[in-house]
Image (cartoon, rainbow over all chains, first blue to last red; front, side, top):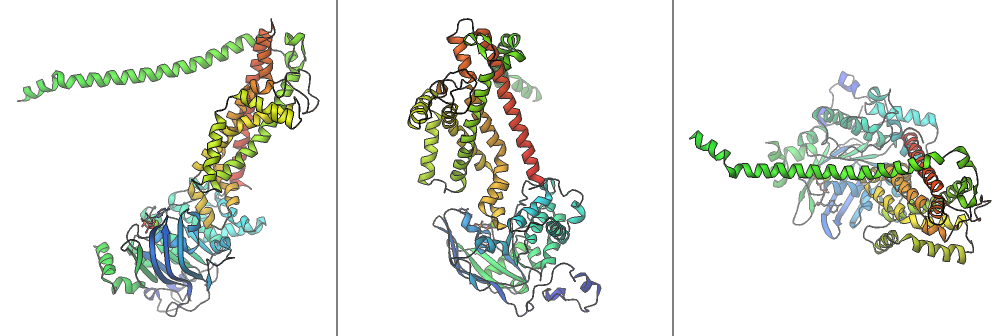
Length: 292
Length: 299
Ligand SMILES: Nc1ncnc2c1ncn2[C@@H]1O[C@H](COP(=O)(O)OP(=O)(O)OP(=O)(O)O)[C@@H](O)[C@H]1O
Ligand SMILES: [Mg+2]
């Protein structure tokens, strides 16, 4: 049984229909203890980040637990996107962006000299707010990064493409037009394709930056269900402005706020605790205010 | 009460601006239409002039024969061959160099770095240098200093220097316009920058690169001044690219300026030059389309 289910999701009877439904057919559940005794996969210590000398994040410390969904919430401009980008060193692409502090992934500092950045990003994938399919066919979108990472055999590629498209529930919709341009898909389909593309690399962690905010409620629901189904198999960090969504899917939640000059982490804990018994009054106000 | 409103509405104060607006609009549209007419009229006139005068002289013999009597009689076969060689050398040298420079400027230099600004400024200056100066430089550097003499190679390389700024400029614009999301998404998938460049950014910039290339070919094909000093005007069939060769533009210039009674053949040669450039353009466009399509579905 999936040990990473939310408390409320735990089926009473392991043989019930619900339990059967949660028995994934594709990919093993990541080994590790349940969320009640979580192991941190990524630990962030005293992370600060600045753009061209202007601080955007200051002194963030938190742990991302293996196999769990961690939601990051907070007002616009408090540095959630910057935080996510720092986790897989996408911040390296931005001229003038400086990161200080330590980020350990699998107990290894990702800023250590000799760190294989491409390998790191392969392990820690990222999904952007706006779907970013490449101007290639649906198949080539998934194959291109795979080929870059050395997968050459047509049969392997074919099999992986089908597997990830099935994982994201897109296979039935696109199996007859794999060679059609990916940019002709709908927004929701594009976002699922991007998730499939990231999953094809068999990452350990998925960072998702508001993956549903550019989608209509129906597609958003589909993507949300998809994220739910990733629990246990992947470690997910999701930024969302939709508090109800965070509440529905997350095991852990972190609340960011714009402090004096830079963004800071106000509170981090079990999702239920953050939403129901927040320790900090800012959290309470944000969580309640946004609800009303 | 209503009457008063009506009278006010119909009074001069409200009508005058309306008339003024109408006049302004008509004038503006009229002016725009006139400009369009003048531009397309000029083009049609130019083309029909060349076609009308050139077509009667044009025949397979003209295309496949060697010139006789200083070009008054015979054909232009060796000249077409020389022209194609010169263009080929120019593009083969300038296109890779231009693309490489553009890639260096857009992808591997920080924006606003001193190096980048220096290179871009020099490119801007080079683009404004008159072609005769390139001719003199090409003569001094390629013909004399590198001892290539008056040759197709010297001419082609001189033209390459001349079109390089155009190629660099359009390629830089094209690559800058390629969406940043491709760079980010590719990096987030652990792809190297060169892979992103090869598979995503260059294809995205391909229309701009092609436009620059065609502009460059057009300019190189029309160039006369720079070639007189470098590839010379020997009108024999070139045996190698170290032979001197006369380009079509030089031939046209020579026939119309230096050879009495050469006008008819000058027109026919001009027509051939236009057809040659149009053919190259459509060929390049078709090839790019084909390549982009293949790129999309296969490696
Ligand atoms: N590339 C950049 N260059 C300079 N400043 C930036 C850059 N990206 C973000 N910032 C600044 O850093 C701060 C945090 O931005 P960030 O995008 O991380 O916020 P966010 O929490 O993701 O906001 P939102 O909820 O609107 O997406 C903002 O003040 C923003 O202006
Ligand atoms: Mg953001």
